[in-house]
Length: 294
Length: 324
Image 1 (cartoon, each protein chain N blue to C red):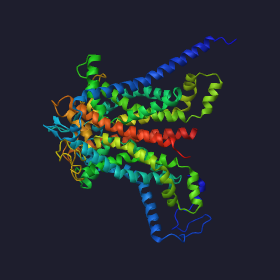
Image 2 (cartoon, helix red, strand yellow):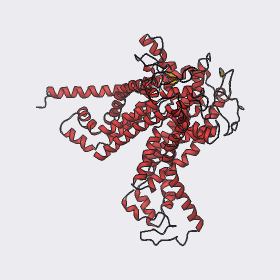
Image 3 (cartoon, rainbow over the protein chains, first blue to last red):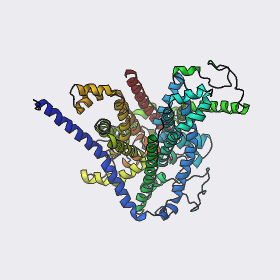
Image 4 (cartoon, rainbow over the protein chains, first blue to last red):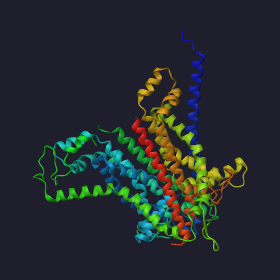
Protein backbone atom coordinates (compact mmCIF):
# COMPACT_ATOMS: atom_id res chain seq x y z
CA UNK A 1 0.00 0.00 0.00
CA UNK A 2 2.79 2.42 0.86
CA UNK A 3 5.12 1.79 -2.08
CA UNK A 4 7.13 4.83 -3.01
CA UNK A 5 6.03 6.58 -6.22
CA UNK A 6 8.49 7.76 -8.89
CA UNK A 7 7.64 11.31 -7.89
CA UNK A 8 8.36 10.65 -4.24
CA UNK A 9 11.69 9.07 -5.12
CA UNK A 10 12.73 12.09 -7.18
CA UNK A 11 11.79 14.38 -4.33
CA UNK A 12 13.73 12.34 -1.84
CA UNK A 13 16.79 12.30 -4.10
CA UNK A 14 16.60 16.05 -4.59
CA UNK A 15 16.24 16.57 -0.86
CA UNK A 16 19.34 14.50 -0.24
CA UNK A 17 21.23 16.31 -2.99
CA UNK A 18 20.29 19.74 -1.58
CA UNK A 19 21.34 18.72 1.91
CA UNK A 20 24.72 17.46 0.67
CA UNK A 21 25.30 20.47 -1.58
CA UNK A 22 24.56 22.96 1.19
CA UNK A 23 26.63 20.97 3.66
CA UNK A 24 29.47 20.98 1.14
CA UNK A 25 29.19 24.78 0.85
CA UNK A 26 29.51 25.19 4.60
CA UNK A 27 32.44 22.78 4.67
CA UNK A 28 34.28 24.68 1.91
CA UNK A 29 34.01 27.80 4.04
CA UNK A 30 35.22 26.29 7.27
CA UNK A 31 37.82 23.77 6.15
CA UNK A 32 40.13 26.25 4.35
CA UNK A 33 39.92 28.48 7.41
CA UNK A 34 41.18 25.71 9.68
CA UNK A 35 43.88 24.80 7.16
CA UNK A 36 45.04 28.40 6.78
CA UNK A 37 45.21 29.04 10.52
CA UNK A 38 47.11 25.77 10.93
CA UNK A 39 49.50 26.74 8.11
CA UNK A 40 50.17 30.16 9.68
CA UNK A 41 50.92 28.61 13.07
CA UNK A 42 53.28 26.01 11.57
CA UNK A 43 55.21 28.64 9.61
CA UNK A 44 55.41 30.95 12.63
CA UNK A 45 56.37 28.25 15.12
CA UNK A 46 60.18 28.77 15.16
CA UNK A 47 59.78 32.38 16.33
CA UNK A 48 56.92 32.16 18.78
CA UNK A 49 58.12 32.75 22.32
CA UNK A 50 57.64 35.19 25.20
CA UNK A 51 60.82 36.93 24.08
CA UNK A 52 59.20 37.66 20.73
CA UNK A 53 56.36 39.49 22.46
CA UNK A 54 58.52 41.54 24.80
CA UNK A 55 61.43 42.77 22.67
CA UNK A 56 61.48 45.67 20.26
CA UNK A 57 61.90 45.09 16.53
CA UNK A 58 65.54 45.56 15.52
CA UNK A 59 67.69 45.72 12.38
CA UNK A 60 65.12 47.63 10.31
CA UNK A 61 62.35 45.32 11.57
CA UNK A 62 64.15 42.27 10.24
CA UNK A 63 64.88 40.85 13.68
CA UNK A 64 63.68 41.12 17.23
CA UNK A 65 60.13 41.02 18.49
CA UNK A 66 56.96 43.08 18.41
CA UNK A 67 56.86 44.77 21.83
CA UNK A 68 56.36 48.35 20.67
CA UNK A 69 53.63 47.29 18.25
CA UNK A 70 51.89 45.17 20.86
CA UNK A 71 51.90 47.98 23.43
CA UNK A 72 50.73 50.50 20.80
CA UNK A 73 47.75 48.31 19.91
CA UNK A 74 46.93 47.96 23.62
CA UNK A 75 46.93 51.77 24.01
CA UNK A 76 44.81 52.33 20.90
CA UNK A 77 42.22 49.69 21.82
CA UNK A 78 41.92 50.78 25.46
CA UNK A 79 41.57 54.45 24.66
CA UNK A 80 39.22 53.90 21.71
CA UNK A 81 36.87 51.73 23.75
CA UNK A 82 37.09 54.03 26.78
CA UNK A 83 35.71 56.74 24.49
CA UNK A 84 33.27 54.68 22.40
CA UNK A 85 31.73 52.53 25.14
CA UNK A 86 30.16 55.30 27.31
CA UNK A 87 28.89 57.27 24.32
CA UNK A 88 27.60 54.14 22.60
CA UNK A 89 25.89 52.78 25.70
CA UNK A 90 24.21 56.12 26.48
CA UNK A 91 23.12 56.46 22.84
CA UNK A 92 21.59 52.99 23.02
CA UNK A 93 19.87 53.93 26.30
CA UNK A 94 18.39 56.93 24.53
CA UNK A 95 17.20 54.86 21.56
CA UNK A 96 15.78 52.04 23.65
CA UNK A 97 14.45 53.85 26.73
CA UNK A 98 13.71 57.46 25.81
CA UNK A 99 13.14 57.77 22.08
CA UNK A 100 9.59 57.68 20.79
CA UNK A 101 8.41 56.58 17.38
CA UNK A 102 9.05 59.79 15.51
CA UNK A 103 11.14 61.18 12.65
CA UNK A 104 14.15 61.95 14.89
CA UNK A 105 14.40 58.34 16.03
CA UNK A 106 14.15 57.13 12.44
CA UNK A 107 16.91 59.51 11.40
CA UNK A 108 19.13 58.38 14.29
CA UNK A 109 18.62 54.71 13.43
CA UNK A 110 19.41 55.44 9.80
CA UNK A 111 22.54 57.33 10.85
CA UNK A 112 23.68 54.39 12.99
CA UNK A 113 23.19 51.98 10.08
CA UNK A 114 25.08 54.25 7.71
CA UNK A 115 27.88 54.98 10.17
CA UNK A 116 28.38 51.22 10.43
CA UNK A 117 28.72 51.05 6.65
CA UNK A 118 31.26 53.83 6.18
CA UNK A 119 34.44 52.28 4.71
CA UNK A 120 37.36 52.19 7.12
CA UNK A 121 39.55 54.24 4.78
CA UNK A 122 36.94 57.03 4.81
CA UNK A 123 37.14 56.97 8.61
CA UNK A 124 40.87 57.46 8.12
CA UNK A 125 40.28 60.51 5.92
CA UNK A 126 37.84 61.89 8.49
CA UNK A 127 40.28 61.30 11.33
CA UNK A 128 43.03 63.05 9.40
CA UNK A 129 40.83 66.00 8.46
CA UNK A 130 39.01 66.43 11.76
CA UNK A 131 41.34 65.30 14.55
CA UNK A 132 44.86 65.51 13.18
CA UNK A 133 44.49 68.75 11.23
CA UNK A 134 41.37 70.65 12.34
CA UNK A 135 41.57 69.87 16.07
CA UNK A 136 45.33 70.17 15.81
CA UNK A 137 46.08 66.97 17.70
CA UNK A 138 48.74 65.98 15.21
CA UNK A 139 49.33 62.36 14.41
CA UNK A 140 48.95 60.83 17.84
CA UNK A 141 47.51 57.93 19.78
CA UNK A 142 44.66 60.23 20.82
CA UNK A 143 43.69 61.12 17.22
CA UNK A 144 43.92 57.48 16.12
CA UNK A 145 41.87 56.30 19.09
CA UNK A 146 39.15 58.87 18.43
CA UNK A 147 38.99 57.70 14.82
CA UNK A 148 38.71 54.08 15.94
CA UNK A 149 36.11 55.06 18.55
CA UNK A 150 33.80 56.57 15.94
CA UNK A 151 34.24 53.49 13.81
CA UNK A 152 33.18 51.12 16.60
CA UNK A 153 30.41 53.36 17.94
CA UNK A 154 27.55 52.09 15.71
CA UNK A 155 28.30 48.45 16.52
CA UNK A 156 28.37 49.18 20.26
CA UNK A 157 25.06 51.04 19.93
CA UNK A 158 23.51 48.07 18.13
CA UNK A 159 24.73 45.42 20.57
CA UNK A 160 23.79 47.51 23.63
CA UNK A 161 20.33 48.14 22.23
CA UNK A 162 19.87 44.42 21.86
CA UNK A 163 21.00 43.83 25.45
CA UNK A 164 18.67 46.54 26.76
CA UNK A 165 15.66 45.32 24.86
CA UNK A 166 16.21 41.83 26.32
CA UNK A 167 15.22 43.24 29.74
CA UNK A 168 11.48 42.54 30.04
CA UNK A 169 9.19 45.54 29.86
CA UNK A 170 7.47 44.39 33.07
CA UNK A 171 10.68 45.16 35.04
CA UNK A 172 10.44 48.81 34.00
CA UNK A 173 6.72 48.93 34.68
CA UNK A 174 7.26 47.58 38.18
CA UNK A 175 9.78 50.36 38.83
CA UNK A 176 7.52 53.08 37.53
CA UNK A 177 4.67 51.73 39.63
CA UNK A 178 6.61 52.19 42.85
CA UNK A 179 7.31 55.79 41.83
CA UNK A 180 10.74 55.56 40.23
CA UNK A 181 11.51 58.05 37.50
CA UNK A 182 12.67 56.88 34.10
CA UNK A 183 16.33 57.47 34.99
CA UNK A 184 16.00 55.70 38.36
CA UNK A 185 14.48 52.69 36.64
CA UNK A 186 17.31 52.66 34.08
CA UNK A 187 20.10 53.00 36.64
CA UNK A 188 18.58 50.74 39.26
CA UNK A 189 17.06 47.95 37.18
CA UNK A 190 17.60 48.11 33.42
CA UNK A 191 21.39 48.63 33.37
CA UNK A 192 22.24 46.12 36.14
CA UNK A 193 20.15 43.48 34.38
CA UNK A 194 21.76 44.05 31.00
CA UNK A 195 25.32 44.94 31.97
CA UNK A 196 26.75 41.54 31.05
CA UNK A 197 25.17 41.67 27.60
CA UNK A 198 26.49 45.21 27.12
CA UNK A 199 29.99 44.17 28.19
CA UNK A 200 29.99 41.22 25.79
CA UNK A 201 29.18 43.57 22.95
CA UNK A 202 31.99 45.92 23.96
CA UNK A 203 34.53 43.11 24.36
CA UNK A 204 33.71 41.83 20.87
CA UNK A 205 34.80 45.24 19.63
CA UNK A 206 38.25 44.81 21.19
CA UNK A 207 39.18 42.41 18.42
CA UNK A 208 37.74 44.60 15.68
CA UNK A 209 39.62 47.64 16.95
CA UNK A 210 42.85 45.70 17.33
CA UNK A 211 42.64 44.40 13.78
CA UNK A 212 41.86 47.65 11.97
CA UNK A 213 44.70 49.12 9.98
CA UNK A 214 43.35 51.69 7.55
CA UNK A 215 41.90 54.16 10.10
CA UNK A 216 45.15 54.41 12.06
CA UNK A 217 47.56 54.53 9.11
CA UNK A 218 47.31 58.29 8.70
CA UNK A 219 46.14 59.34 12.14
CA UNK A 220 48.73 58.00 14.56
CA UNK A 221 50.42 54.74 13.63
CA UNK A 222 53.98 54.79 12.35
CA UNK A 223 56.21 52.22 10.67
CA UNK A 224 58.80 52.17 13.40
CA UNK A 225 59.23 53.51 16.90
CA UNK A 226 61.58 52.37 19.60
CA UNK A 227 60.31 52.38 23.17
CA UNK A 228 61.57 51.17 26.53
CA UNK A 229 61.20 47.41 26.74
CA UNK A 230 59.05 46.09 29.57
CA UNK A 231 57.69 49.54 30.52
CA UNK A 232 53.89 49.50 30.11
CA UNK A 233 53.76 53.33 30.24
CA UNK A 234 56.25 53.91 27.47
CA UNK A 235 53.80 55.81 25.27
CA UNK A 236 51.95 59.04 26.01
CA UNK A 237 48.67 59.74 24.26
CA UNK A 238 50.31 62.55 22.27
CA UNK A 239 52.94 60.16 20.86
CA UNK A 240 52.73 58.32 17.61
CA UNK A 241 52.88 54.59 18.09
CA UNK A 242 53.40 51.32 16.31
CA UNK A 243 50.45 48.95 16.03
CA UNK A 244 50.30 45.23 15.48
CA UNK A 245 48.07 45.39 12.39
CA UNK A 246 50.12 48.16 10.83
CA UNK A 247 53.34 46.28 11.68
CA UNK A 248 52.07 43.19 9.85
CA UNK A 249 51.25 45.32 6.82
CA UNK A 250 54.67 46.97 6.91
CA UNK A 251 56.81 43.89 7.22
CA UNK A 252 54.76 42.08 4.58
CA UNK A 253 54.78 44.77 1.92
CA UNK A 254 57.51 47.31 2.69
CA UNK A 255 60.36 45.40 4.29
CA UNK A 256 62.20 43.12 1.91
CA UNK A 257 64.41 40.21 2.97
CA UNK A 258 62.86 39.86 6.41
CA UNK A 259 63.18 36.29 7.71
CA UNK A 260 60.18 34.24 6.62
CA UNK A 261 58.84 33.38 10.04
CA UNK A 262 58.70 37.02 11.21
CA UNK A 263 55.53 38.16 9.39
CA UNK A 264 53.95 34.78 10.09
CA UNK A 265 54.63 35.13 13.81
CA UNK A 266 53.18 38.66 13.81
CA UNK A 267 50.09 37.45 11.97
CA UNK A 268 49.64 34.58 14.42
CA UNK A 269 49.91 36.92 17.43
CA UNK A 270 47.33 39.29 15.92
CA UNK A 271 44.99 36.52 14.83
CA UNK A 272 45.47 34.66 18.10
CA UNK A 273 44.61 37.73 20.18
CA UNK A 274 41.50 38.41 18.12
CA UNK A 275 40.24 34.83 18.21
CA UNK A 276 41.04 34.46 21.91
CA UNK A 277 39.14 37.62 22.86
CA UNK A 278 36.16 36.64 20.71
CA UNK A 279 36.03 33.05 21.91
CA UNK A 280 36.13 34.25 25.52
CA UNK A 281 33.28 36.66 25.01
CA UNK A 282 31.24 34.07 23.09
CA UNK A 283 31.68 31.57 25.93
CA UNK A 284 30.80 34.32 28.43
CA UNK A 285 27.64 35.05 26.43
CA UNK A 286 26.63 31.40 26.24
CA UNK A 287 27.06 30.97 29.99
CA UNK A 288 25.01 34.11 30.62
CA UNK A 289 22.19 32.96 28.39
CA UNK A 290 21.94 29.66 30.19
CA UNK A 291 21.83 31.43 33.57
CA UNK A 292 19.12 33.88 32.65
CA UNK A 293 16.58 34.33 35.42
CA UNK A 294 13.61 35.23 33.27
CA UNK B 1 8.33 51.60 23.59
CA UNK B 2 4.59 51.18 23.81
CA UNK B 3 2.01 53.95 23.74
CA UNK B 4 1.12 53.50 27.39
CA UNK B 5 4.57 54.83 28.32
CA UNK B 6 3.41 58.32 27.54
CA UNK B 7 1.88 58.42 31.01
CA UNK B 8 5.18 57.64 32.75
CA UNK B 9 6.87 60.69 34.28
CA UNK B 10 10.12 61.38 32.44
CA UNK B 11 11.66 63.26 35.33
CA UNK B 12 10.42 64.58 38.61
CA UNK B 13 11.94 67.97 37.97
CA UNK B 14 9.35 68.65 35.34
CA UNK B 15 5.76 69.64 35.95
CA UNK B 16 4.31 67.89 32.92
CA UNK B 17 3.37 64.63 34.67
CA UNK B 18 0.11 63.26 33.42
CA UNK B 19 -0.16 60.18 35.63
CA UNK B 20 -1.48 59.41 39.02
CA UNK B 21 1.45 61.03 40.81
CA UNK B 22 1.42 64.72 41.53
CA UNK B 23 4.00 66.86 39.79
CA UNK B 24 7.10 68.18 41.49
CA UNK B 25 9.97 66.55 43.34
CA UNK B 26 9.27 63.83 45.84
CA UNK B 27 9.76 64.95 49.44
CA UNK B 28 12.61 62.52 50.14
CA UNK B 29 14.94 63.36 47.24
CA UNK B 30 17.80 65.80 47.80
CA UNK B 31 18.30 68.50 45.24
CA UNK B 32 21.71 67.29 44.00
CA UNK B 33 20.16 63.97 43.00
CA UNK B 34 17.66 65.76 40.83
CA UNK B 35 20.45 67.78 39.26
CA UNK B 36 22.45 64.62 38.55
CA UNK B 37 19.37 63.03 37.04
CA UNK B 38 18.63 65.98 34.78
CA UNK B 39 22.29 66.12 33.80
CA UNK B 40 22.33 62.46 32.86
CA UNK B 41 19.14 62.75 30.86
CA UNK B 42 20.63 65.57 28.82
CA UNK B 43 23.84 63.60 28.38
CA UNK B 44 21.81 60.62 27.14
CA UNK B 45 19.93 62.81 24.66
CA UNK B 46 23.20 64.31 23.49
CA UNK B 47 24.76 60.87 22.95
CA UNK B 48 21.56 59.75 21.27
CA UNK B 49 21.94 62.23 18.46
CA UNK B 50 25.74 61.75 18.27
CA UNK B 51 25.43 59.23 15.44
CA UNK B 52 23.78 61.87 13.26
CA UNK B 53 26.47 64.38 14.19
CA UNK B 54 29.22 61.93 13.24
CA UNK B 55 27.71 61.00 9.87
CA UNK B 56 27.44 64.67 8.95
CA UNK B 57 30.85 65.30 10.50
CA UNK B 58 32.47 62.65 8.32
CA UNK B 59 30.87 64.08 5.20
CA UNK B 60 31.77 67.64 6.18
CA UNK B 61 35.41 67.10 7.15
CA UNK B 62 36.23 64.82 4.21
CA UNK B 63 34.62 67.28 1.81
CA UNK B 64 36.32 70.21 3.53
CA UNK B 65 39.76 68.80 2.74
CA UNK B 66 38.91 67.98 -0.86
CA UNK B 67 36.52 70.71 -1.96
CA UNK B 68 39.25 73.11 -3.06
CA UNK B 69 40.08 70.97 -6.05
CA UNK B 70 36.55 71.27 -7.46
CA UNK B 71 37.30 74.91 -8.29
CA UNK B 72 40.80 74.34 -9.58
CA UNK B 73 41.50 74.75 -13.34
CA UNK B 74 43.23 71.34 -13.40
CA UNK B 75 40.05 69.54 -12.46
CA UNK B 76 36.94 68.69 -14.40
CA UNK B 77 34.17 66.50 -13.01
CA UNK B 78 33.64 64.66 -16.29
CA UNK B 79 37.33 63.81 -16.44
CA UNK B 80 37.25 62.69 -12.80
CA UNK B 81 34.38 60.29 -13.40
CA UNK B 82 34.91 59.16 -17.01
CA UNK B 83 38.63 59.18 -17.69
CA UNK B 84 40.97 56.27 -17.08
CA UNK B 85 44.03 58.54 -16.90
CA UNK B 86 45.21 58.61 -13.29
CA UNK B 87 48.34 60.78 -13.20
CA UNK B 88 47.86 62.80 -10.01
CA UNK B 89 51.54 63.71 -9.61
CA UNK B 90 52.49 64.35 -13.24
CA UNK B 91 54.78 67.38 -13.60
CA UNK B 92 53.58 68.41 -17.06
CA UNK B 93 49.89 67.58 -17.12
CA UNK B 94 48.09 66.24 -14.05
CA UNK B 95 45.01 64.15 -14.76
CA UNK B 96 42.60 62.87 -12.13
CA UNK B 97 40.54 60.20 -13.90
CA UNK B 98 39.24 57.55 -11.50
CA UNK B 99 37.30 55.41 -14.00
CA UNK B 100 39.97 52.69 -13.93
CA UNK B 101 39.83 52.67 -10.14
CA UNK B 102 36.05 52.45 -10.17
CA UNK B 103 36.23 49.60 -12.66
CA UNK B 104 38.81 47.99 -10.38
CA UNK B 105 36.46 48.23 -7.40
CA UNK B 106 33.52 47.02 -9.50
CA UNK B 107 35.40 44.03 -10.94
CA UNK B 108 36.72 42.83 -7.58
CA UNK B 109 33.36 43.42 -5.88
CA UNK B 110 31.42 41.81 -8.73
CA UNK B 111 33.53 38.66 -8.82
CA UNK B 112 33.56 38.39 -5.03
CA UNK B 113 29.76 38.60 -4.98
CA UNK B 114 29.52 35.94 -7.70
CA UNK B 115 31.39 33.67 -5.28
CA UNK B 116 29.93 34.94 -2.00
CA UNK B 117 26.21 35.10 -2.81
CA UNK B 118 25.68 31.37 -3.51
CA UNK B 119 27.99 30.44 -0.65
CA UNK B 120 26.61 32.97 1.83
CA UNK B 121 22.94 32.32 1.14
CA UNK B 122 23.53 28.57 0.83
CA UNK B 123 25.24 28.54 4.20
CA UNK B 124 22.45 30.69 5.68
CA UNK B 125 19.87 28.16 4.44
CA UNK B 126 21.91 25.24 5.79
CA UNK B 127 22.37 26.84 9.20
CA UNK B 128 18.76 27.95 9.46
CA UNK B 129 16.88 24.99 7.94
CA UNK B 130 19.09 21.91 7.68
CA UNK B 131 20.93 21.92 10.98
CA UNK B 132 19.79 22.01 14.57
CA UNK B 133 20.96 21.84 18.14
CA UNK B 134 24.67 21.65 18.74
CA UNK B 135 25.66 21.66 15.04
CA UNK B 136 23.76 24.88 14.51
CA UNK B 137 25.32 26.61 17.52
CA UNK B 138 28.83 25.47 16.53
CA UNK B 139 28.39 26.67 12.94
CA UNK B 140 27.14 30.06 14.13
CA UNK B 141 30.14 30.46 16.44
CA UNK B 142 32.60 29.48 13.68
CA UNK B 143 31.00 31.95 11.27
CA UNK B 144 31.19 34.66 13.94
CA UNK B 145 34.91 33.93 14.38
CA UNK B 146 35.37 34.00 10.59
CA UNK B 147 33.92 37.52 10.65
CA UNK B 148 36.43 38.57 13.31
CA UNK B 149 39.57 37.92 11.26
CA UNK B 150 41.16 41.33 10.60
CA UNK B 151 41.38 42.47 7.00
CA UNK B 152 45.15 42.91 7.21
CA UNK B 153 45.43 39.21 8.09
CA UNK B 154 43.28 38.37 5.05
CA UNK B 155 45.64 40.48 2.95
CA UNK B 156 48.59 38.61 4.42
CA UNK B 157 46.90 35.29 3.55
CA UNK B 158 46.35 36.67 0.04
CA UNK B 159 50.07 37.32 -0.38
CA UNK B 160 51.48 34.23 1.31
CA UNK B 161 48.88 31.54 0.62
CA UNK B 162 46.63 32.55 -2.29
CA UNK B 163 49.38 34.07 -4.42
CA UNK B 164 51.44 30.87 -4.93
CA UNK B 165 48.25 28.82 -5.05
CA UNK B 166 46.86 30.84 -7.97
CA UNK B 167 50.23 30.85 -9.74
CA UNK B 168 50.46 27.07 -9.63
CA UNK B 169 46.83 26.22 -10.29
CA UNK B 170 46.32 28.50 -13.28
CA UNK B 171 49.92 28.77 -14.51
CA UNK B 172 49.96 32.56 -14.46
CA UNK B 173 53.07 34.64 -13.69
CA UNK B 174 51.53 36.76 -10.93
CA UNK B 175 49.02 35.61 -8.36
CA UNK B 176 48.13 39.06 -7.01
CA UNK B 177 45.11 39.91 -9.16
CA UNK B 178 41.33 40.29 -9.36
CA UNK B 179 40.76 36.62 -8.55
CA UNK B 180 42.90 36.76 -5.41
CA UNK B 181 41.25 39.92 -4.06
CA UNK B 182 37.77 38.68 -4.94
CA UNK B 183 38.28 35.36 -3.16
CA UNK B 184 39.41 37.16 -0.01
CA UNK B 185 36.52 39.63 -0.20
CA UNK B 186 34.12 36.71 -0.68
CA UNK B 187 35.44 35.03 2.46
CA UNK B 188 35.13 38.34 4.32
CA UNK B 189 31.58 39.13 3.25
CA UNK B 190 30.16 35.62 3.62
CA UNK B 191 29.81 35.83 7.44
CA UNK B 192 27.73 39.01 7.32
CA UNK B 193 25.51 37.45 4.62
CA UNK B 194 25.07 34.28 6.65
CA UNK B 195 24.08 36.06 9.83
CA UNK B 196 21.66 38.50 8.18
CA UNK B 197 20.31 35.85 5.80
CA UNK B 198 19.74 33.50 8.72
CA UNK B 199 17.88 36.24 10.60
CA UNK B 200 15.69 36.78 7.54
CA UNK B 201 14.84 33.06 7.30
CA UNK B 202 14.22 32.85 11.04
CA UNK B 203 11.75 35.72 10.72
CA UNK B 204 9.51 33.66 8.42
CA UNK B 205 6.69 32.38 10.65
CA UNK B 206 6.80 28.68 11.50
CA UNK B 207 3.22 28.35 10.29
CA UNK B 208 4.59 28.69 6.73
CA UNK B 209 6.88 25.72 7.30
CA UNK B 210 4.12 23.70 8.92
CA UNK B 211 1.71 24.46 6.08
CA UNK B 212 4.29 23.39 3.50
CA UNK B 213 5.05 20.16 5.38
CA UNK B 214 1.34 19.44 5.71
CA UNK B 215 1.04 19.68 1.93
CA UNK B 216 3.67 16.95 1.66
CA UNK B 217 6.55 19.20 0.62
CA UNK B 218 10.07 18.02 1.36
CA UNK B 219 12.34 20.30 3.31
CA UNK B 220 14.17 21.45 0.17
CA UNK B 221 10.86 22.17 -1.59
CA UNK B 222 9.80 24.18 1.46
CA UNK B 223 13.02 26.15 1.23
CA UNK B 224 12.92 27.17 -2.39
CA UNK B 225 9.14 27.35 -2.91
CA UNK B 226 8.11 28.95 0.40
CA UNK B 227 10.91 30.25 2.59
CA UNK B 228 13.17 31.93 0.02
CA UNK B 229 10.27 33.83 -1.60
CA UNK B 230 8.94 34.80 1.83
CA UNK B 231 12.35 35.99 3.06
CA UNK B 232 13.20 37.60 -0.29
CA UNK B 233 13.71 41.11 1.04
CA UNK B 234 15.83 40.07 4.00
CA UNK B 235 18.05 37.97 1.75
CA UNK B 236 18.41 40.88 -0.66
CA UNK B 237 19.42 43.13 2.24
CA UNK B 238 22.03 40.53 3.24
CA UNK B 239 23.50 40.67 -0.26
CA UNK B 240 23.46 44.48 -0.30
CA UNK B 241 25.28 44.69 3.03
CA UNK B 242 27.83 42.20 1.70
CA UNK B 243 28.36 44.47 -1.32
CA UNK B 244 28.74 47.48 0.97
CA UNK B 245 31.40 45.66 2.96
CA UNK B 246 33.24 44.56 -0.20
CA UNK B 247 33.27 48.04 -1.76
CA UNK B 248 34.64 49.61 1.41
CA UNK B 249 37.24 46.98 2.21
CA UNK B 250 40.73 48.44 2.11
CA UNK B 251 43.67 46.46 3.46
CA UNK B 252 42.93 43.07 1.90
CA UNK B 253 42.48 44.50 -1.60
CA UNK B 254 45.44 46.83 -1.14
CA UNK B 255 47.68 43.85 -0.47
CA UNK B 256 46.16 41.22 -2.76
CA UNK B 257 45.02 42.82 -6.03
CA UNK B 258 48.43 43.60 -7.49
CA UNK B 259 48.18 47.35 -7.38
CA UNK B 260 48.17 48.43 -11.03
CA UNK B 261 45.87 51.16 -12.37
CA UNK B 262 44.36 49.11 -15.11
CA UNK B 263 41.07 48.14 -16.76
CA UNK B 264 41.14 44.36 -16.26
CA UNK B 265 40.55 42.06 -19.24
CA UNK B 266 40.59 38.81 -17.31
CA UNK B 267 40.40 37.73 -13.69
CA UNK B 268 44.18 37.27 -13.76
CA UNK B 269 44.87 40.96 -14.42
CA UNK B 270 46.02 43.11 -11.51
CA UNK B 271 43.83 46.12 -10.64
CA UNK B 272 43.70 48.96 -8.15
CA UNK B 273 40.53 49.86 -6.24
CA UNK B 274 39.30 53.24 -4.96
CA UNK B 275 40.02 52.30 -1.34
CA UNK B 276 43.49 50.93 -2.04
CA UNK B 277 44.43 54.10 -3.93
CA UNK B 278 43.65 56.29 -0.95
CA UNK B 279 45.53 53.98 1.42
CA UNK B 280 48.56 53.74 -0.84
CA UNK B 281 48.91 57.37 -1.89
CA UNK B 282 47.71 59.51 1.01
CA UNK B 283 50.99 59.03 2.83
CA UNK B 284 52.96 60.51 -0.06
CA UNK B 285 50.64 63.41 -0.94
CA UNK B 286 51.57 66.68 0.73
CA UNK B 287 48.74 68.30 2.69
CA UNK B 288 46.70 70.70 0.55
CA UNK B 289 48.12 69.65 -2.82
CA UNK B 290 45.88 68.67 -5.74
CA UNK B 291 46.83 65.03 -5.28
CA UNK B 292 45.87 65.19 -1.58
CA UNK B 293 42.57 66.86 -2.38
CA UNK B 294 41.60 64.38 -5.09
CA UNK B 295 42.11 61.51 -2.62
CA UNK B 296 39.55 63.15 -0.33
CA UNK B 297 37.17 63.49 -3.28
CA UNK B 298 37.56 59.75 -3.84
CA UNK B 299 36.66 59.41 -0.16
CA UNK B 300 33.45 61.37 -0.77
CA UNK B 301 32.71 59.14 -3.77
CA UNK B 302 33.17 56.01 -1.62
CA UNK B 303 31.09 57.51 1.18
CA UNK B 304 28.28 58.21 -1.30
CA UNK B 305 28.40 54.71 -2.81
CA UNK B 306 28.24 52.94 0.55
CA UNK B 307 25.63 55.42 1.79
CA UNK B 308 23.33 54.55 -1.12
CA UNK B 309 23.94 50.80 -0.74
CA UNK B 310 23.24 50.88 3.01
CA UNK B 311 20.20 53.08 2.55
CA UNK B 312 18.87 50.64 -0.05
CA UNK B 313 19.48 47.70 2.30
CA UNK B 314 17.69 49.54 5.10
CA UNK B 315 14.68 50.37 2.91
CA UNK B 316 14.51 46.77 1.68
CA UNK B 317 14.48 45.51 5.29
CA UNK B 318 11.79 48.05 6.22
CA UNK B 319 9.78 46.86 3.22
CA UNK B 320 10.11 43.29 4.45
CA UNK B 321 8.84 44.28 7.89
CA UNK B 322 5.95 46.18 6.37
CA UNK B 323 4.82 43.09 4.50
CA UNK B 324 5.17 40.72 7.45
